[in-house]
Image (cartoon, rainbow, N blue to C red; front, side, top):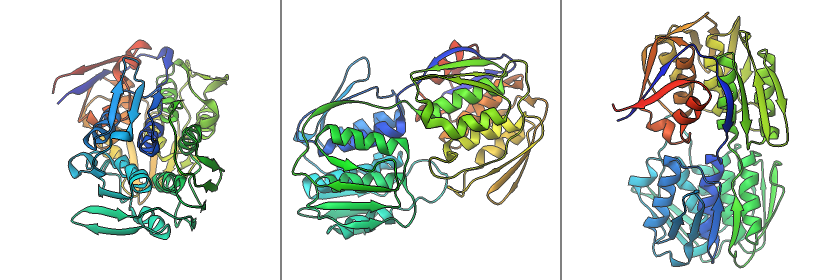
Length: 419
């Protein structure tokens, strides 16, 4: 099993091209199941989770082809088996996103209960209750969700909690339902908007994505089409923090600044100078130690839970004391234990991390516990004295495309080594 080795101390400087969004590409690939003609999806990131989704589609009999630029063509007309097996679903929670499209298009779906990162309970009850309200017969048997419906019907659904995958699954299910479906208290994330834009490209009739109320007028079928996945805002945020934590100057290309307002505001609060253009962001933290910041995670457009681990690393070497309150997942501070091994002064009190910045961290062998935690350990390693070795980096490969090449291109001493 590969590891990453980092040598700390070098300010990062240069340009990074941001990849397509993992959290947009996965539901879009699942949504291609709704189309009765081939669909071409561009700007798909080359990640383990994407490979898993493509393998899952292929296991169902869907024809999937890729070119060297990661344009993915999906032809679901050949689907033979609306079944998502445990051995694939257990590795990636986003596999649950095939449930709605399979049921809407083929009238049946057998999907294993999901796995993925060990960051806390993420129940599927909202998915199930929503499909039942749309007329589906749903049961959970032997670890599988079994759903049946001749044709889903419209419904008005008020989600118990704001959930991204729940919003996406029910929106996809409603696209081919009979009548008008209204979803309220839905997620507003840019990835939800990107999925709606993709489906509308294929002939769906969705409006309101990006607000807390989405209205879907069901159609008989979706046709083929081409679509380009939006830039990854979490990858963007991670490289911005890398520029800040190393006291460097980094410019991001092919990104979407408007999706990062909360992150940019916190980086400016930490003392960074930030400039933005239509598709670029530049951060300048040269010769300045960051100031500690307080933050609280919450659904978009507030501060994203997927960025709190990276800011924990920033606070660990910042001037002052910063408090991070995690409100989305109850088990998302596992990176804190590893950072303590590197000399970070962090105290946990329930869902709050209180971090007192130290002048420098010390290299140590550490272990990645989930996707974003692994990114935070890379950031910590970039400012630690000595050589840090990060184990279990398969988590990183699930969500960051070519991370060591991108970091090396802006001056980081980082390499992948055999385990």
